[in-house]
Structures are given as structure tokens and as C-alpha cells.
Image (cartoon, rainbow, N blue to C red; front, side, top):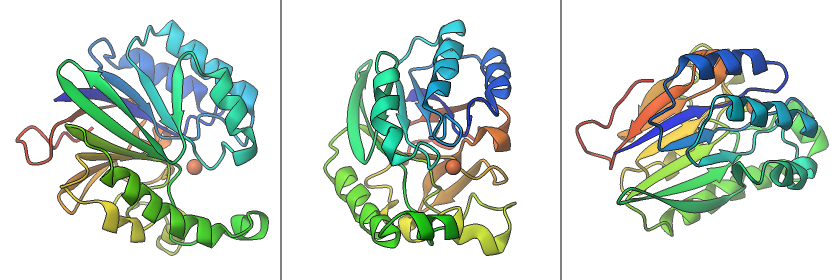
Amino acid sequence: MVKVGAVGDIHSPKFLEDFRTALKSADCSKLDLFLFAGDLVLKGKVSNIEEVLDTLEENKIKCPIISCFGNEEYSNIRAEITMKAENRIKFLDDESTTIKIRDVNVGIVGSQGSLESPTSWQSRNIPNVEKIYAERIDKIAKILGNLQTDIRILLTHYPPTYKVLKGERKWFYPHVGCNRCEKVISSDRIDAVICAHSHLGIPFALVNNVPVYNVSLPATRKISVIEVSKTGSLDQYMVP
Ligand SMILES: [Fe+2]
């Protein structure tokens, strides 16, 4: 079992104060891993990653920190944000990494994820966005399939299911999450899914017997602390 702290949608500086409060009230001393589920900064403002890094430092987060990108980390700022955070946060953009925690190999696949249907802004501004989203689902499945670790975590910004979207406007579901992504969620290749982006959604749902956690800060108001075990073990379902 590994103990993971997770949060997304800080949109620094918008919810930075909430992030500070959440970190102060969480017990992060025994975390094995800290995961950000994207949208650390607001609308492409790269420099605002500094406050996030300072807040981590102030709160003495010592464990490895991994992040995927959110939709507000626009593709043209990702290299810069990766560089600014490189000593502290490892960003995964449709890729995986493996970390050894005690005697357990933990694999994390990080991706912005896909939407069922692009927003109208995305359709107007991102060429081939539908194709990008469709191809990304297969890409994630492939990366997961290649990950030969004891525990496997899928970290996406967009929820890869509608099940954690309860509370969002129903007609808007296709622009907040992706139901087609459920096909990649299976207990033989994932032990936990961690996502964000749904500010009004619920924190937990099961998809094909795999726990899916929405760790969006505006939704949870806290750092979600999740104990991840091999799928099927008894202590698997921790509602954050
Ligand atoms: Fe988002």
C-alpha cells in the first residue's frame, strides 16, 4: 500500500490561499507520493507556478511530486513550466514514470486526458482537437499496457468517466469529462485513477471496480489522502 496526497485545480493565484489552508490542515508527513492533477496555474500564467512551489516548500513536502498538465497549462507554456518546476515537480505529458516506494514499484501514467466533446472555445482554437482527444485515449491505453509495475495509477486532468461529475450541469458533462475513456479503466491495468477539472463534481466513484478520485480543490476543499493498493485488496477503497 502507498499513501498518496493529491489535489488539482489550484489555478494559481485563484485558489492558492485555499491550497495553503488545505496543505496546512493535511497530515502530509507520512505521504509516499504527492500528485497534482493539473491546472496548477491560471490561464497559462507560467510565473504563478512559483507560488505553488513556495507553498510546497513552506509545508515541507518531502516526497516525490508528480503532475499532469491541465487545460490551463496551454501547450505553448508546458516546456517552460516543466523547466521552472524541474527541481521539485516532474510533469508527465502522455507518458509514464516509475517510482520505487519501499519494496513496491509504483507506475504513474500522466496525461491531460480527453473530453467526450471539445468545448466551443477548443473547437475554434485547437486544430484537430477531436482527433487529439480520440487518439489520446488509445495512447493512454497503450502506455498503461506497457507499464509493468506492482501498482499502476492513472493521473489525468479531465475525468475519464461521467461518474464523478454529479453536481455539474448534465448537458455540460461531455465538455467536462470523457465517458469513452472508461474503456481504458480496467482492474487488470489500473489500481487507482486520480483526476480533477470538475469543480462541482463528487470525490469518488467506482468504474469497472477501479476507484476513481476527483481531487479538484474547489470540489474537495482539501488535499485528498488516498491509500492505493493493488486492485482487489481489502484496504483499497478509501473515500478521500
Ligand atoms: Fe481544468
